[in-house]
Image (cartoon, rainbow, N blue to C red; front, top):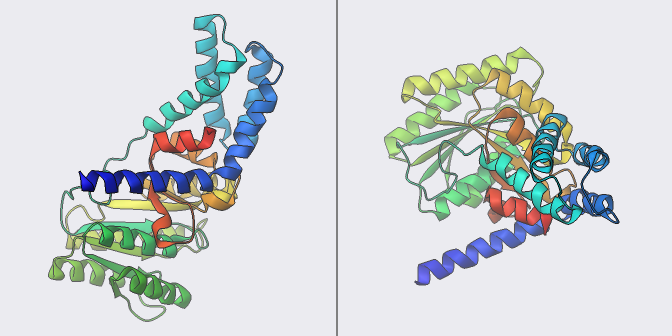
Length: 319
């Protein structure tokens, strides 16, 4: 009973942080919707045209906007009469459905049972999206869930990345595996997985370089890191998580295109939702790439990396 009460309080706190983090996106997207339907009594083709513009300019993305509009057109055709009062709840339902269609292969809950130990996670993304910070927060979350974690600094291209990951590893209370600046990233990944195996760790998280996301060199390097880990532990990495900065809107979609084309991405982490009005990009990216959003970053604190709850996200967007 006590545990349940604690869980409920934590969930409520997370929902509150998410609501605060989505304030700018909510004001943008649903603020525009309010203005669109004001004074209208029925959804017609004209309203749907304007709605299309609202969704596209809220960074939901063209493809996902068209998917939502098509669903609404079917609903309007079926029900013959749909009032503008129903529009917000209809859109909320459609967005929720799009997000729910993309469920993660592995539960995002940090306490969920692990199919194997060590569970190896490779984290990818361009520089500046908050990748290293996110790894620190993820490691901390796992530690809070009672898991032993080792992190590997395979972004050897930037000395600052190794140093930054060291600071976050210390804050999270986890072991860091590193080599000198400029070392072979695959060798660091190898050492990290080997250390996780020999120490009986639950989780190994590997940071990777994020430079030159438009050049094949980086993608070849990521493929090499994957191969090296796979030779150590069958099926490793078990997850490849792509970190994207929500505040860059449509550019995040372009980055997702590049990475999903070159690396087998199993989940997304959207950062910096708290400082942007472009949170609608979460909907577009999840739908367009058929890759689930697993975690969202809603602040600077260790506890501000949250498991992505689709229903809570839609509720926080439209409150």
